[in-house]
Image (cartoon, rainbow, N blue to C red; front, side):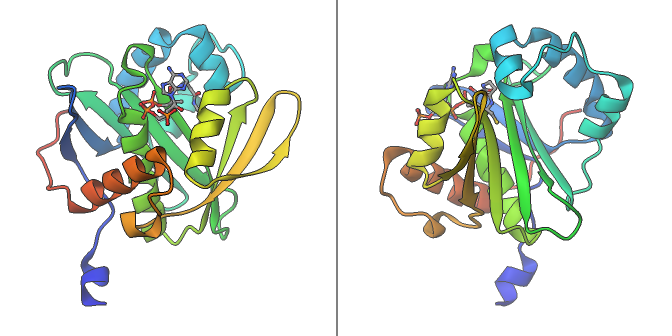
Length: 211
Ligand SMILES: CC(C)(COP(=O)(O)OP(=O)(O)OC[C@H]1O[C@@H](n2cnc3c(N)ncnc32)[C@H](O)[C@@H]1OP(=O)(O)O)[C@@H](O)C(=O)NCCC(=O)NCCS
């Protein structure tokens, strides 16, 4: 019980993937705004559509301010940088936003720059949201996924998410918030990977933050 009181949501830490990619993960801060602007410009049309369901030409100053000032309770956000290329805009971002101030439910969005997709960073940031969301008292995550993003829908289902609605363009899924790896069974390869990442995030040692 005492340990649980001492536990904190993930801060800044470094993580090494088996393929050699080394990233720094940190909670999003206002000084990340230029990285957001540059990263958005690098996103392919397909990724923008899958994440934002539209084709904005860029982010407005109001949007940038919102995206880079999460409060850690109503709005939680983590980003990853490639430690070997820190001057790049970044690798990706994941965030969750509570449906309303008192709700135990939050909606998740994850965006990984195209050149980094499929290397595990999305799952690592996803694990950070589960850990931080659990500590902030969240119970369920909602995922609104583009209906043609079948691969990611299957991935969420392999983690145990259930589909709660579907229209022509968007599939909505829900998954309980997982504080630790042992909250998830090893029933699929994807669940086993997230389980290991949840444990790695819980055990991560703090690292000095790059800007
Ligand atoms: C979907 C996305 C967030 C996954 O992050 P990632 O770092 O690429 O993925 P990971 O390597 O951690 O793998 C996790 C799952 O993502 C999916 N994924 C991986 N690469 C992908 C790609 N290029 N396109 C679509 N889905 C992909 C897979 O389902 C994978 O799980 P699986 O190996 O069990 O099938 C990322 O590809 C992305 O930003 N896509 C565009 C925006 C988007 O679709 N966001 C999701 C809506 S919230």
